[in-house]
Image (cartoon, rainbow, N blue to C red; front, side):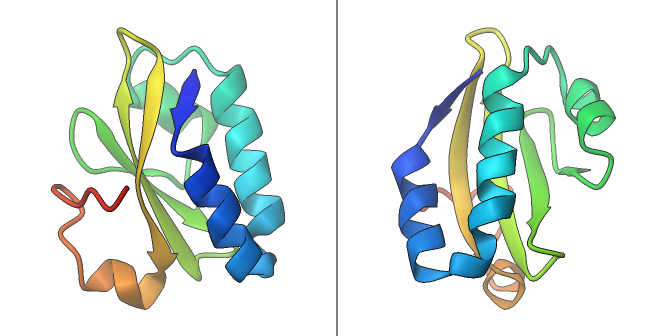
Length: 100
């Protein structure tokens, strides 16, 4: 899959170095994936939470941070919609947020 807003993740891990290893691992997994559905994502990442038919929430750095991505399975594209602390995640609407 192609990841849109990779630079956003790089900027985030620059400000939050404790997330760098986890976000690099997430990028590597997503780039190598050929997922056809949210079920495929959960198979590869059992802790991921499916929010709807296209959005999935991932825990980063032991759950201290959250990442929301929207997936276009037909075009094989993952769009980063949110990356932030668990507290910031609690203040947003995960189904509509689009910060990037």
